[in-house]
Amino acid sequence: MIFCSFINNLTRGGIMALIVVIDDDPDIREASTVVLTAKGHEVITAANPEEGYNLVISKKPDLIILDVMMNEPDDGFFLAQRFRKENISTPIIMYTSVSKAMGMSFEVSNMVPVDEFIEKPISPDTLIEKVNKLLNK
Image (tube, rainbow, N blue to C red; front, side):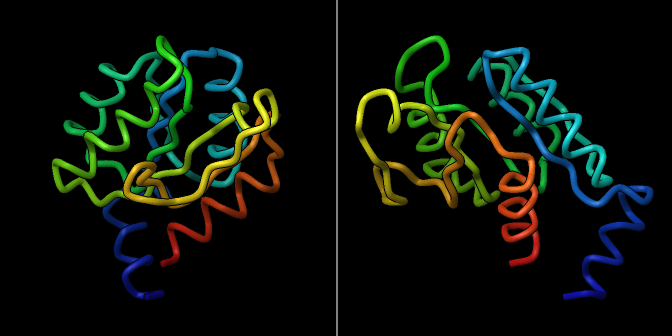
């Protein structure tokens, strides 16, 4: 595993991982980028599901981070499902504020095919912990 990480690091020019962040909130995109690039990752962002989908298809990132609610309240769910239906197995972290705002909770399932959830407001430590966990699988 260490050797694979080393090879990935070499092939990406010293960058630890390529991460796509898909969120309609520019502040969240910027904060995520700052935290992740400080740890050596390359981050590209998208402001909506279609732009995010196109980035994932063209750039083939190591990790996808997406928001539950964007243009529509369930955009993140549908996008995650679309990735899985198209056999895109890239790990997905989903940002959510729905559970706190509406008293709902989500679990990883076929309906919500993501690997981890992070509640907003996002803690930088939690973000890095979950990113590292998924990249080191």
